[in-house]
Length: 295
Image (cartoon, rainbow, N blue to C red; front, side, top):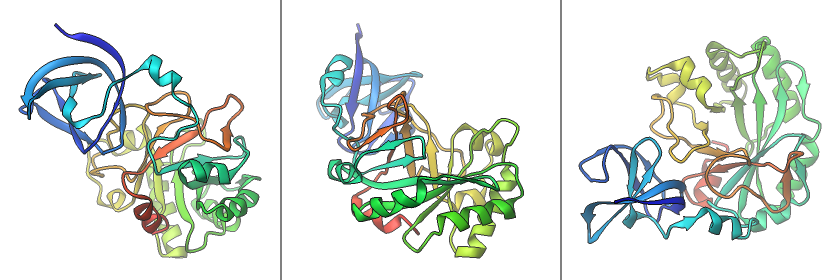
């Protein structure tokens, strides 16, 4: 008989997520990096592996072996844990002018490693907080990045708008935000053209931020052009799955502060008007993140 539980566990090592049965014979559909926190819906007996026969059930008939994760934390216990604690770490936070920032130094001290800030939208839109926050974030020891929200406007105008405001140097991460925008939608071909124009100007490609839109646009095809870019995946569940062009994400936006696994508050950054902050997970060390940041 299954014991019904609601809470979370955190992977101690890389853990396979299996579908269909709590067994090493079941199909591996993804894996959790060490440090990844996932929500579980039950605890269930399964195949005995190294003397441990307990498994945790996830949504969609998926299972992880209990020996690969830490102690179960109930929802009630999670709520009582200090909300200022940041996990997983290192963390990257993305911001725009509607987010409130009190202290980048406090965020850095709590485990934040990098900030990706909105710079521009379309051909003319600009974020009036970008320039001032850039200096204070860098002074606090944080990595700095800039993103552009793509629209249906002519690509050359969008690239010019972005480069004129963002003024990326060799240490600045560059990202293209490819998400749904009613009546002003950037196309898949627009993403290609934007990336090519950025490469022509800077000799490097942008990180591509997207979720279901990139999956809808590319379907099940493996596209080498897109696969050559780093993927910043927005997916607010315990098992993020990239489109087939990528074997894994480079950066995972696991919460918008309202939904998604893991802790969602950041010291020094109070977020939008209802207190939500976009938090992102990097599967590696702080040194690895720094080395890959603006590449």
